[in-house]
Image 1 (cartoon, rainbow, N blue to C red):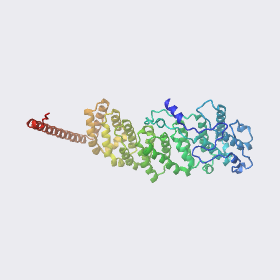
Image 2: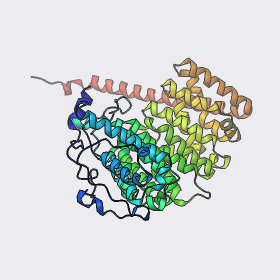
Image 3: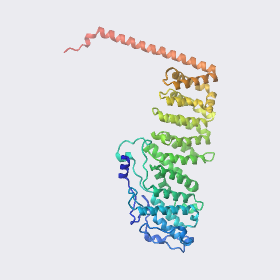
Image 4: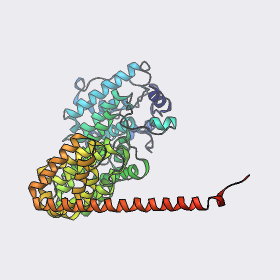
Length: 489
């Protein structure tokens, strides 16, 4: 409750009274509404004879589209768009209640109008005004996070309650209108790209930091549709998303929409043509793999793992790069994060071919050996579960002469000293599996391990004996010359 009060107190609302028309189209916009110039909009051939409606100074009820002649629907459309340009304070549910309801009904009518296919008759100027209205409503200052309000250390994002946008009853309909406009088969991309331009896309991407999951879901769908429909924007969108990831990884480590952006990229990666462009491989190396570094990885790991696996399935030669990247960012003390890494590693190995596996198997199983001996039983169990995957067992069997000597000491250590019985039982099963694969190799590894243990024991005994001799010599010296060190008052 305290967080919501703080957010509400520091929020920068962009609103206007019912009798005070908005003067700008959203924060940061350079577009100024000049009501005197509304009639001077460029007319398309379809509406050259249709006069522009006068500017509206308040929200007022308007007739339905079906109640006016087709020739007057252009002007009515513009008046309805003007109605929706008025913003209200939704923190006060009583204030301007009538005007809010009129605006909501008007937005519903606009959504139905675009969805019904009637949008093909609206002119360029109508489309421009509609996009301006959408921009005015959705592009706003997002409220600061709770840690920004109080100056306290940021809490775990998973444990924080999301801030729900109070204006969502209107905002949802504005997003729905934009979505219907973008996906409509009647929307001409050559015309629409004049208004859904790079600046518009950048502002959409800024909104992905919204804490409201409902808003992020709409943004994800809309941006994905824009990427699919406006081919000219594709390189720009990829680059802009990369920049968000760079800031998240190296500067902030806090962003609400990383998971949604990765979902969009998962679909984009799925459509990459082969052979893969160098740009896409660099994206994997410079962006996706370093995304394993931030602490809140649990929030977006599922989407990140999907993107990574997509790359390996598209080009199996990338498996070595991916596995070495995972090892580079492998967590040392975070058991929850290590479990996520082991889950992702299994998915990557499942798509890995034998040649690529051989390139990275030595450092890989050195790390798996450390995970097997983890005192956290879930980590140890998750590492042992790798042997339940037939493809991974096949890769291990083909390279057992290299892998078993690496992994054998970890297996023995588990059996001799691990506190968890489940880990003990799973380790015993894996030992039996190796014995069935190659008994001679297993016995050789066992012999080498015993020799190494005996030698280590002998070295330890020698070390203790040396310390004992030093202690005896020191005691003897203190007994002989003890008077030299006495302190007298």
